Amino acid sequence: MTTLSHIPVVKAGMLIRKPVEEVFEAFANPAITTKFWFTKSSGRLEAGRRVKWDWEMYGVSDDVYVKELEENKRIRIEWSDSTETEWIFTPRADNETFVAITSSGYTGNGDEIVTRAVDDMGGYTMVLCGLKALLEHNIVLNLVADKAPDANVDR
Image 1 (tube, rainbow, N blue to C red):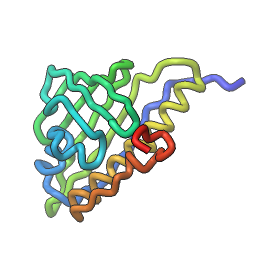
Image 2 (image 1 turned 180 degrees about the horizontal axis):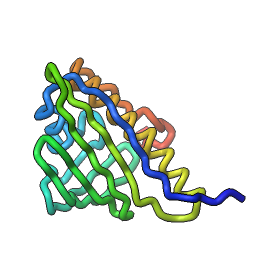
Image 3 (image 1 turned 180 degrees about the vertical axis):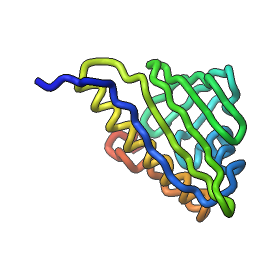
């Protein structure tokens, strides 16, 4: 049996060809985020605030705690299972922003940790692709809803 020598840290990143203020706002403002990630939110991300995110098509939700928020630079949240996700927004030339997402703090047995980390890496990559399509081309791809159509409670 293989054991983990260290707990995985998930990383995903994407260049978005929009100004950092616009890219940051897409994650902080649920009116935008609901177009590419979750379907409902109890409010805007603000440091020290708890926010509920819903994925209504799957009948699931999670409560996240906004541990840190630096306008146009960084967002760090803690999920209800104590994992943490951090977004770093790096402005680049000509109205470009690189978004780096890191998720850490996985717990459970080795199989559970690896399964969750792999799922999260794919999920965050998909979220970034959806964000890119929305901000750069004004296209809503429905990636999250279409990832697992058989799990959709509305079908």
